[in-house]
Image (spheres, rainbow, N blue to C red):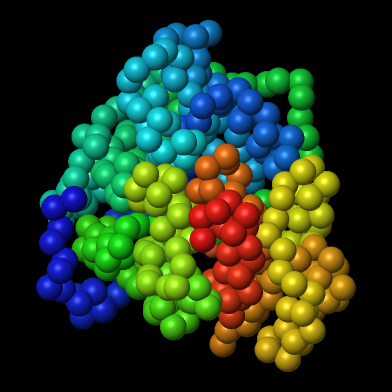
Length: 379
Ligand code: FE2
């Protein structure tokens, strides 16, 4: 990253999102994992993802295998190396399983690359056309925080199951979907004093604007703290909150992540549902583990958020949290880390008007995370 932001004030530099990088949506999220075959089964069995496409030895891919899974607008790619050495193994060695690529769906991948690199984005992939019998796709990409990449995908001339090089994957085993619709936001954890640098990156290089700002007074408990800013693209389809650790009496959950991930990376993927009670009931029945808050949370929550459409009882039974802003309310719940290292997790979110991120729940939530950290001996 070549953007020096130490002397800049983000809010002054970019008052609003610019349109030089129109993004249609999240194209896919690719994770590098130790065992993609088993990870694919996890996401199918526990999360209701449907098999879409595959590449591996059978398709001529000699050094890596990828399984592509989809639920509504969410596409996951799980990639493992087939040989020793090489960049995928190095990534897994450094970070454990984790998000390598946040791919963005664009109309013009060449222009996306030109506009971002001329503003200081560091290229990881010059515009490149890949073709097969189903058409052609143009790719390009830039580096973001840590070893994470943004790949721009232009697929208007492609009709295959996923991307060139992949074949349709039709295993017999399927599970019902659980109602996940789209990626609401994806959060990046960055190191000490790096939040502003990366918010500036999204503002300057990608034309994003800052939505909301929290400081460490908003997001701290007795022990641990963090700071967070939310960056959004112009049409609001892409929202990237960026967290950094803040000083507390004990270790910040962000610092724990950075320690185990060995640097900056994607902390959580928030996925939207239209019925969080049904979705979380299904996920729990399939073995997904969630953070819980004390029952006392529900004794006062309606005083804070006012009337809601749902009965409180099923929300309390499942541990779903509620928050309200000027525009409405939201329901949300967070999984425990889904990997052995305490790094990445998922959030399930149902928005009922609210466009914020659950600030009113942070205290209860972070106390829940601290109880888990205590058990890991990392608080
Ligand atoms: Fe979130």
